[in-house]
Length: 423
Image (cartoon, helix red, strand yellow):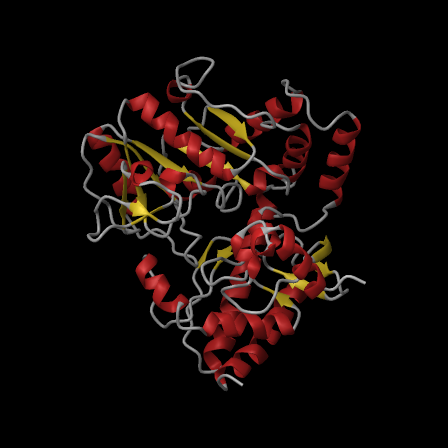
């Protein structure tokens, strides 16, 4: 019989660190990862047969819950006709139409196989369309692991960036400027693109302060730069029209992923027709992908998006409201410092009393060790949170009120355990 330990040992011999994405290694929370055997609805089961109430949900990709019958049937039907062709298909046209019809100001999209590809391609397109080189990003916002986006802030708040990973050359990030989230930077006329998570969901959860997104729009307009919203997480989760619909600020470019693939690998980037026409084969900006618009991914994405009506978004937000309030209450009652930020159906856990407004403030809460201990206490009780303090919780449409109440009850016991101090 396979166990989590035996599989991790085997994986470590053939996969660096035993995982195919670093956060899965449990380095931030201790112990070894559980290996998922199957999922259904709000739950996953590991290879040892233990069931977990899952708030990872593939980091937001599974908005309907795991193995939703309509998504599975769509994938099965598509697979019977073939899995990949390297040629146009009806499914990619339908998915592109569905995305552009939902998002105000979005005329055209190009499908990719990942959010990283979408972010990388957005930068190249912006540079090609503007004839400029510099990009501006925000500390703590994650836009995939392409070299120019793996940048950390320099010694001053708006300094030239330095590489945030070994193997990334100074030249690769030399045209990247990193500034604090929730502060509108001063832009020069050499800036091609300002890229931002409209709701920052990779440093716990930090919403935009009033006027922040509006200020970015105005700053970009003033110098002729393009503004990109990275909605890989927020797209089709905050609302059907995403952040542009919620906040009333329209960017020039968007990045999408996760929800639009129904749990299969997918990404997309898009914008107004005037900008997108710079892409090959219409224009000089090259971008391509053998598996882009994959028929299984487009089928799954269409099935998932077809379930997201107004009632679905109301339900998602309602579950998040209940969960956030309950967690904040029981964790604070145990005597732990806690702030549970919530934006729409997204929520985070900051083990600090002061709401975080940027990455530096989020890091203070992440590094005090309380998330690590709370994660372990919850996992021991069958509640799966993301194995890292900078991630968010993803209630899905499969999480019922009983699941939320059970989570809050178990969080009370977990917090009380943590409050007693290390064993």
